[in-house]
Length: 345
Image (cartoon, rainbow, N blue to C red):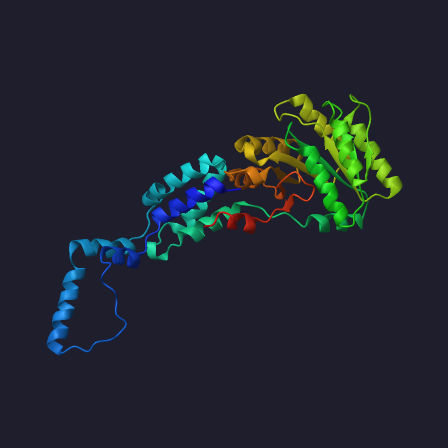
C-alpha cells in the first residue's frame, strides 16, 4: 500500500522544502563555520564587520535571506498545492478528500515563513485528520452481548470484492477471541456461492444456515438468527449477494435484509485497488443502509493507496480492517497512525 503515492509525496516535499544553511553550504562547499573564537585587533575587527555587512547586503544575499522571512501568501500556497493536488488525484485520492487536505494545509501554512514550516509534518497531520480510527471490534461485540444476543453483522458490497473470503477471515478472528460464530448464506443468487461459503464453514467448523438458490435472502438471515438464539451462539455473520450500487431493485433487496435481520453492524466490503469507483460505491451503500464501517480487501497489492484516504472522508465511517492476503490470518486492524507512517513522510 502507498508505493507510488509514497515516492511521489517524498519527491514533492523534497522539492519544496529548503534549508538556508544547506543551500549556503552547497554554494560554498569549501567554506565551513569555525566553532573556535578568534580575537582580532580592533582595526581588523572593524574591517571584518564592514566586509560581512557588505557581503550580506549584496542583491543575491539579500534575496536569499529575505526569501526565508517572507510569509506564504494564499497565491503562493495555491501554486505550491497545485502539483500536490495532481499527485493525490492520480493516486486515487477522491477530489473531496484532496479539498479537505488543502483546507487543512491552508490553515496551517498561509501566513507562515519557510523557517516556521515543517511541510512533511503538516502534510502527514492533514492526511491523518481525514482518516477515522475504528472502535475496538471485539470489545464492541462483547459489550453488546451483555445486553442481548446474538450480535448480528450483515456484509454487503459489489460482485467480486472478496466478500465471502473476508467473512471467513472475520469468523476466524472472532473464534480466536473466544466468540462462537455461525454464518448465513444469504447470497442465493450467484452460482456456487453457497458451496463456496460451505467450504469455509467446514474448515472453521462452524454452522451454516442455507436454503435453495432463489430463496428469499432475508429469510435465510432470519433463520440463522433463530438458530443462533436457540444454540446460544454469540455472533451471526450474514453473507449477501454482490450488487452494483446503481441497481435500484438490488439495493432495495439489501434494505429488506437489513430491515428483517436488524443487524448490530452493517459492513461494506470493497476492493482497495478499484480506487474512486470503490469510494463512490461505499457512499451509495452508506446512503441506502447507513453502514457501520468499511473493510478494504486487497490492500496488500494496492500500490496507489488513495482509497484508504478517500473512503473514510467520503462516508464519515471508519475503516475496520484491511485485507492483506488470502489466508484467514491475513486481516489487519486499521490504525490510521500506522497507515500514515507507511507514507514515510
